[in-house]
Amino acid sequence: MLELLIASKNSGKIKEIKDILKNTNIKILSLNDFYDLPEIKEDGQSFQENALKKAEFISKLTGKICLADDSGLAIEYLGGKPGILSARWGKSDKERIQKVLNLLKGVPKKRRKAKFICALALFFPEGKSYIIEGECMGIIATSPRGSNGFGYDPIFIVPEYNRTFAELGEEIKNKISHRAKALKQMKQILENLMGKE
Image 1 (tube, helix red, strand yellow):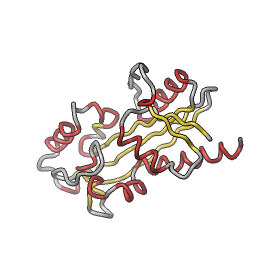
Image 2: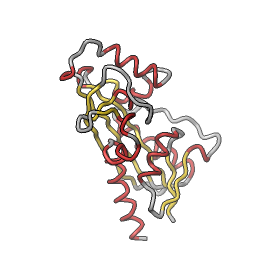
Image 3: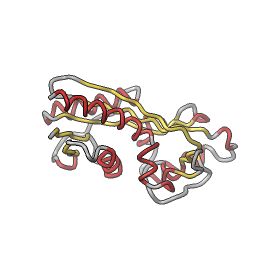
């Protein structure tokens, strides 16, 4: 069995990754299984840079194969913001959502296009690494809708369903989300590597 350490303490993110990687011969650990690990400074210029930095740092610290993700929301009208600053745009999900809604007040639907981006980095203690990116296109709602999900999910409408991520529920979200798309590709890489063992 392959042991894989997720470089995150975010329970929503960890659950999403576990759901997508279930039925594989992979044992999943997270940063919640470790104590006293130092904070990782996310100062990269892109999602990919930040994901790789986290994966490499935690892998070298623990000696384990590490999977890290850096993801966020890019809004066209705001020139791609909040982007890599998505998690740091406020002190809470509620505050971050309100900031987006305030900045888009009065902006028509056709100019509210956005995308969720997820970069996944897999790092092996011996130095080998893989990076994958997934995207999901959407539109920013005028007010939060739904109670499932986390982060910006309540204001991110998926046009095909005309529902927010927070209204869709895990089953659909785990098929179409940015993280799901990246994880499906990463799952393939992991299964290929396990097949070579």
